[in-house]
Structure formats: structure tokens, C-alpha cells
Length: 115
Length: 114
Image (tube, each protein chain N blue to C red):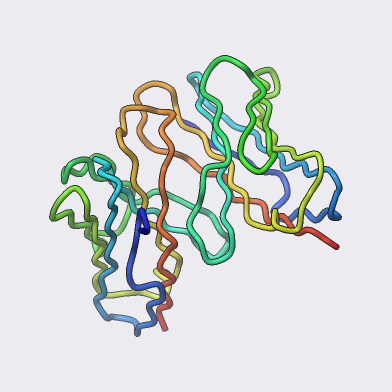
């Protein structure tokens, strides 16, 4: 069983569209994250939720809205897609965000291409 | 605030040669340091981490890293490269107090030549 799974794996869409990426973890973790990896492989955190509560919200356009229906799911909805949103988006989870040496478990990524 | 700099976006070594991937960090508090590996079309996996105690940390697949506070470095090494080591490697830092986010370096692509 995949620990952190995200769908779709590839997403190609036109500018201005709205799209969602789904993420689910079966590890029983309390905390989930969204990271964005740009074309230069730079990986930066976007959001973090702990037990459905937002705990990290980096400087991300408000076109990006995370939604956590329960602690096993963290979906990312993007409105009015722009060319600059093209990237690989990674979902991740960890047990306790208050433990600094905790390891993150990553999904395999969603490659978003905005045309 | 924490930051990480990985020297060299691309490193190429021959199979059997020493692998050295460089990472320097900046942190105003004692850091926790990590190396993650990303194989093609996969998510990141933890290779090893430094928290406290022994400064030489051993990880999976024969990799190890040494925390050097005086040099603010956490370089990753492997004595003998294997073809399967070809991947993207990310160094990351997290503050030991108060901060919950992991800050990544820009990654180093490791290529292994036969």
C-alpha cells in the first residue's frame, strides 16, 4: 500500500482554469503538507495542516486553497491557473510537527503544466 | 531564519568513486539537518538526519554525513558510487526550537558514469 498517494500524477490544463490535486495518507499521521518544486528543482513549503487545522501558510497567492476534510486527506485547489503555476506539487505527511527531527513521508508528486 | 546552500547543482562521478555532495546551512539556533533523495518520478525519501550527539551520521545505502558546526556544513559522502545512486539529493534544515517547517536546498543531481 502506498503511504502517501496523490492524484493525478500529471495534470495539463489551460490558463484560467480551476483544478484540484488530491492527497491521502494511510500512515495515521496528524500533519500533512504541500510543497512546490519549481523547474530548477527548488522545493518550498506552501501549507501545513495538523488535524485539519492550518498551521503553516507561506506567502502563496490566495488562488491556492488547501482543504482538509479529515486528517488523512489534504487537497489543493487552484483557481485561475497561471503559467507560473507550472511545477511539481508534492504532498507529504509526518506524525508530529512539534518534533523537529521528524521525517517527512512524500507522495510521488503531481506534475502540473499550464499552457 | 534557516537556509541551506548546496554547492553544485550537478555532480558526476564514475562508478566506484567517492561521492561528495556539499551542503552548508545557516541557522540562528541549533539546527536539525537532513538529507533526502529523490529518484526519477518519485517523491523524496529520507537518507539520514542529524539531531544531537554524534556528528557523523550513517544513513541508508551506504551514505553518511558529518555535521561540522565550525564550518556550518553537513556534507554527504559515500565511499564507492553505484549506478543506482543516480538521483537528486536535497539537504534540508529545521530549527530545533519553535519552527515547524523544513527548509530545503536547491538540490544536487548526481550522475554516475559507468
